Length: 304
Image (cartoon, rainbow, N blue to C red; front, side, top):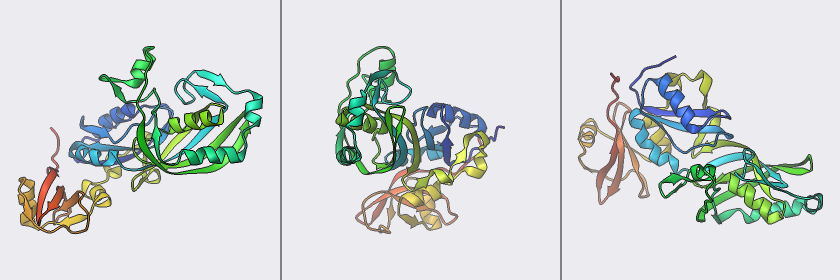
């Protein structure tokens, strides 16, 4: 059912397995009746969980959502490495029974501890990172060898939830809290390498992006766009301090003018500027008693 609307906002979608993030965007475009739909960070087809979409002018908020910390629940299989570092790839190596027998709980916990904190991580070669203008995964699928540079990421917590033997392998259920840009597949790969067994990801669910949770997300197949959409002011107020505008200030800011005003809270990041009617007029930055617009949000109109 098409729900044609020019309203802007943010949708929380619980992505099912088997779909790309682009698939979800395409389906939402049809259902919402607008081409202006974007997402705040991809999920692999194998992965499930929270995908945040922006509609119409609220796509301007996606820049501020992409960099938020994430929470994942994952299953890591020790004993086998794959070309993609997950269950969708071809097997590269399978560990012997002797190697698997030597892995104990202490070694697993030490391995996870070594992957926590501020670490240098080489992303999985089958990733969306661009190399010479092309996605790394496209190069790999074309048969090219891709070597990506290590990047610094923060894994604030890896919690081991369960460990069990499965068909000669060891499956670990873990919860990971991490910075944007962290590859959970790479954690599985690196843990397996450190234990000498190899490892890959067999399941992944993203449960949180910043303050937003998959428990509040809508199912794609039954998505009611209008009922599920979070207004831009609501989203911005969960991310930033709020400056309550007067009616005159709302008009001036909407025209791109600077405001003589003091920051409503400590810090130096963006502030959500909200009109008396509750509309998000823009994001502003404060300096020297002046608020300067970073990005403005137009009044919603029905698309034609």
